[in-house]
Image (cartoon, rainbow, N blue to C red; front, side, top):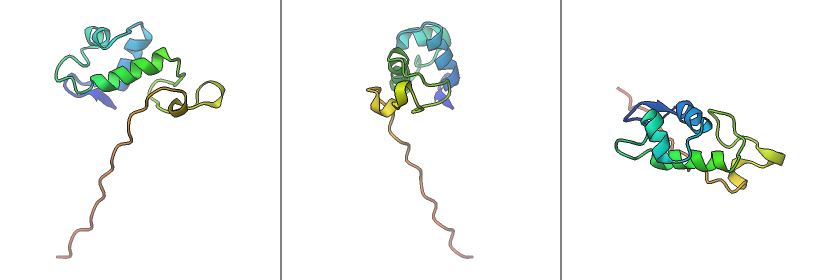
Length: 95
């Protein structure tokens, strides 16, 4: 999944940049360009940084998985992004 649409940067790439030592949105931007254009993805990058620094223990490419001692990211004090709204499809009218 892409986190930064403007620079076409995936979640996995950002997680790798954070794992390699980036500690701020600016450092992530310097290393992979995510968050350096419109800025809409900066909130998601910040959440990823907070989760990494809190030791959330999630595997790359996952969110809300089990972490230390059975806690989940949602109850370990790490902010989680809101659930996406899924549009409902209406049936097409008959011809």
